[in-house]
Image 1 (cartoon, rainbow, N blue to C red):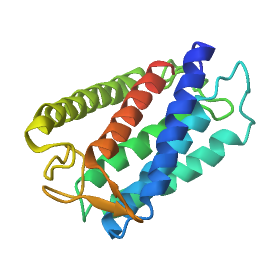
Image 2: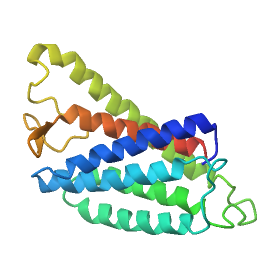
Image 3: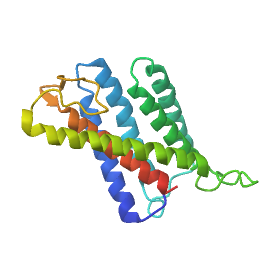
Image 4: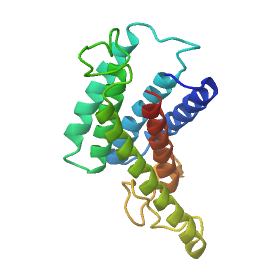
Length: 204
């Protein structure tokens, strides 16, 4: 990834931490929660790997192809699961965005000729993805702020504070082992990944 080294390492840490939290959510008794957490864990760790600054640790030549394979499979999985939950459409967009960025890492990418592509990918497609993630971040952030504003009325453990990306629905809290997974924390992780994706697209 190109850009300031300090910012890149902060993005690596953020994405790795988000991916680790998603791994904890894999212990949920809900099949839907586990399915969503698995896709988000792959996304988080994939983003962390891709965000490593090229000036410090240039990716090996096979890295782009490996990431293309991982996110190609993830996109097919999200497409299949989208028949069960609309949230998997967001996973599909994320997987395709990661696949797109991985393609730009392939040897010789950006040298297609005739001005069709640049080293940073296709400007129109990059712009569309930036617009999508900009809207997603604003929407998810607004949902989290509404949860914070409503919390004093019902207390920190009140039910029904499901954010825009939660699968549990009103009044439901997913369990991870013996611990409750708070929906607003899950949405905060999704917001962090959305911001991370926006930053990575800007750095193309």
